[in-house]
Length: 604
Ligand SMILES: Nc1ncnc2c1ncn2[C@@H]1O[C@H](COP(=O)(O)OP(=O)(O)O)[C@@H](O)[C@H]1O
Ligand SMILES: [Mg+2]
Image (cartoon, rainbow, N blue to C red; front, side, top):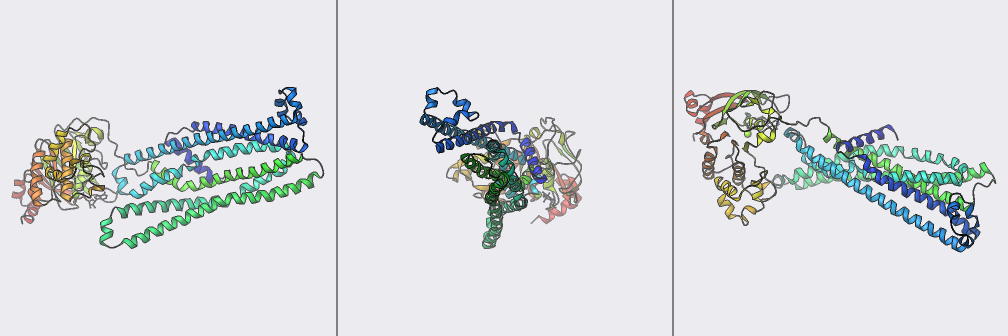
């Protein structure tokens, strides 16, 4: 094996370590495989005396055959005298040995299959867990379609060498046994035949390199295919309205076509290995035959049946050798997907938000933004020296033009992205020191976009909460003014609300989100333009609900419509990522600054 292949195997082993699969489990299928090879050897060994006896019409010689003779020696004299009986016994022995060989082979395949599927299961489980551990920024910069392809396809392809390793092991053992049998039949001939395998080994080298290159290209196409399908299927209205069905279908078809072509090339190469090897074998075998005549002249090399078996084994050996070479092809073709899978295991650019180990038991005094400067990418700051305090039990409003960084503040408060050290304090302790579990339990967010699962309305509202009582659920539904809507639904709360909530209007979605937050009952409530997609009638209803909800809670409210934040204890005005003004409504109006002009703009 050349160096490149070593590196694939090396990567594969580190992958198995990563998913805590101990290679020792492989010992069971390997043991079965070993035993099966031994029985195969015994079967082949029996074939020579069987053929010999058949041709000579006598089995008298049998007691002189090494090993077998010893075994037969235990038989009673009466049987040894009876040729037919002896033939029957040896033939039955041959059959039993071959049946056992196949049973063992099956056990080896089955235990290997079990190991492989377990390994795949572990890999998928660990991969999914890893995805969930990455920060939101990772998902901002990568593609769901790719991740989907990775979980479904690349995972299996990346460990395909492991899934097929029993074939390799069986081939290696069989070859070893063949070798022993060949040597026993004629070591001279075997010496002549040996170069055959060296030729075979090098004959396929170029194919392996080619397959490896193709594998990367295929993985790339596979990922593109996943991206395209997920992207297009999730933006159907856009496709429909811009009439891009044909265009998108053509793009998809092109990628799929490319992939099919590459897949075919790999298949063609992989399946070329065996026939090439067989042809080379036949040629070399013929050469060996002639060579041995020339070398050994009329010397008796072996008996005729032995020679027959000898060449039978050589042909078999070449096919087993082909399996080993084919395995090299499989390793090569797994390298593309393997690289993609290993990227998920690397710690590079995962943007973890890990949290500390302090327990957050609830806000006692205030949330303080302390000279917070933040940028998603390192080149541009979205927030600049943001400094203000959110008092416990009060309502703090954040206003400002779109793109000024309001939602970014919330993203940091929700711990979606890691904030700089000492930039946000909860009661004087850095937010980063608190565990995410304990902190986020106290925070509920209603945001601009409502995330819904393809599930019942009930499960969407109670998502992530345990032991929710029916009363609490109904009261949350009522408070969020969803009651009338639920009554109209055919199955009430158990109605399926479709993928990403397409069966709900914008206002209904937002009320689901509010119900969810109310049900969570957290002491810190964040509303990021929670009423932005509501008509004024519903908004009024919801405003009542919100006014009720913020009572006695610490709330941060971002609202586009300034009328909705009239009751705020404090209003913070942000522009271009900087706090430009803060204070109570009356103060700000008197000051006639930024807030005043926003207020005047919205008057009508
Ligand atoms: N995930 C993100 N990655 C990079 N830039 C972002 C991301 N989210 C928002 N931004 C940028 O940050 C700036 C502030 O956005 P945002 O906080 O959403 O504003 P607002 O909520 O005030 O409308 C915008 O210029 C926006 O382009
Ligand atoms: Mg926003």
